[in-house]
Length: 460
Ligand SMILES: [Mg+2]
Image (tube, rainbow, N blue to C red; front, side, top):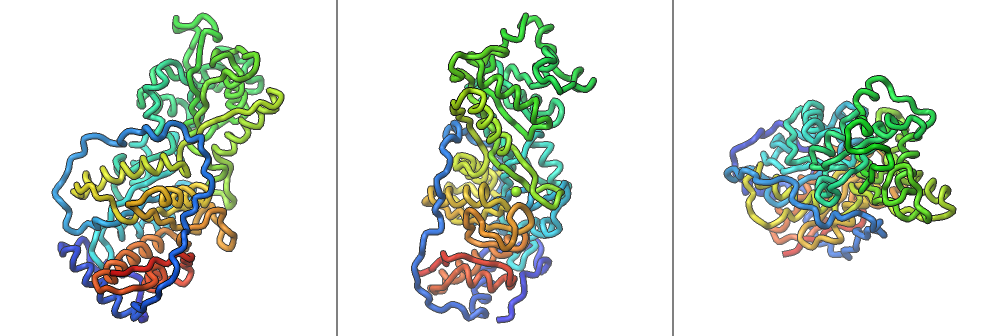
């Protein structure tokens, strides 16, 4: 009964079959002596609350990657469950890996007592770089190879809108010219930035002076031959790709466009109701950075834009759109990515989805809310939310959206998920009924793990 946490190096990338792993799990279950019949109500933990509905056209998102090369089936791969991770506050904080994250990745890649490898993807609201660059950063931080085929950031789904908005789009946020470049790589044809507008008319933002480098890098809209004055420029849509580096001037320019005649720069519509759509790549008001307290994020700018618009227009409401977690469309995008990744990386070509996806996050309002909402919507897969204490969520507080489990850190989350699967498999094979979450918690033997209410009853 005195089980230790899984030995990390006991079996590294064993060539044994997954069936052997189940045998090991069954033995463990017998050791635990917890296979008692404990029937009880399976209450519904998956109430998603009322999700915001202005999620943009995410339902039409196409497949994240194309033409995956399908390798032979990996005999050690877990075919029935998978993990998905938020990044900031879970794996990385202030540019450095959270210490347990490196170990957690090793466990997923086979350094666990069952010798199995578990498919996983990353789903972050952050952005501001090419996906390939962010994967390179993450590879270094976590000491593994992270592929763009297993990675979604806040603005990844915006790729799908480049065919919808074929004219000029205003892209806001991020370092230097990076987000313009990312938007162009997504297929947007004519991308302008706040810097281009300030370069053309420095009175746009009275207290913002472009640096020499910014001035040089910004487009010279009036010298390109296409426009003779700024009011010739018509913005079809505004995309806030990444966090603003200058909230005052970005706010001014977004409000200007929102109040314009059909997106035409430097104009005002009579009723302030002709502005183009405004998209934010996510809606997180705060996020976990290097500072001891959480920092303001893009969701805060979104609120400010809406409030200031109302103030400037005598009470008109501005509807903006947000991608990212907790939007269910983003989780559906992640589901397709995971399916392709399981095939491309592990040879799991079956159309049967994993029965459980463990989502590990630090922000109840986006990670947990979205996972629970996805769980409520998806009949074939249990999306199981795990909240860690290394980021936004503060231990001892009541999370606004309740996870299925809270754990100290991402390594505990991974070990807990693996044990939960192994115990479930073993119980099924043995025809047992048990309180699955409680048994898994005991198997991991970390006292700080809390599971809530919805113990899974397994019966043959
Ligand atoms: Mg986070």
